[in-house]
Length: 294
Image (cartoon, rainbow, N blue to C red; front, side):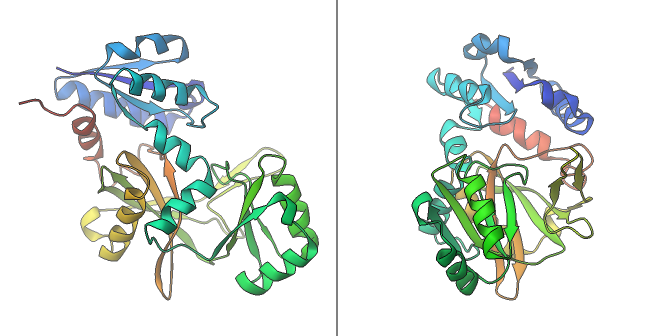
């Protein structure tokens, strides 16, 4: 029997869909003969007592989840997400550099330093990447700090605002689509496939409105055996460029094939969404975290 610690924070258990997924995970763990406990920030000192830690909290290097990952790593406890994966995925500049070195297809991308921001640069990027241009802060997540700019003034306003958070930002070619592919990858193997549908009159899967609302579309889960082979290969290549844990690879599709928009550590797993057509993902997660010892 193995002992699994599921590290969560308050926002994790406030979502019923995410909490239901974690309950399914813990039930599968017990069915397989393991013990599964939920760990919170005050329980972090218990991490060395476990055989594996599964982090289900926001994994910014400045957050407690990263401390949990580092603690597990220091004590030889298997953990997902690994600290290296967190550091890479939480810095889009670093992430894109890994993808480029591995030959992963991505939209045309430029990294812009603070000192280079100017009207001339804006006009140059519109000429090279098209109009509009997508701007991303390096440490953005859940579609926050990801915006479009279609004029020089918009470009300068968004870029300067994002540069309050970092010394560099990312500019990327805009790819029009009605949905994003999401491929979950675990240890170099596809775990689940789904489509995140972009809401009407929006251009990204998740929009945060000024009044605090969150607008997002439905999730369509697709059985692994029915997913396009080229999609899977592209996603696995992208995830393998980052690490061997669990990743959510976002892709768009155009006339040339599939383009990786980004690789996410700690990808969303909500009951009834990502697991709808791939319910075996929980057992696969448990078997990865707590492999059978011969």
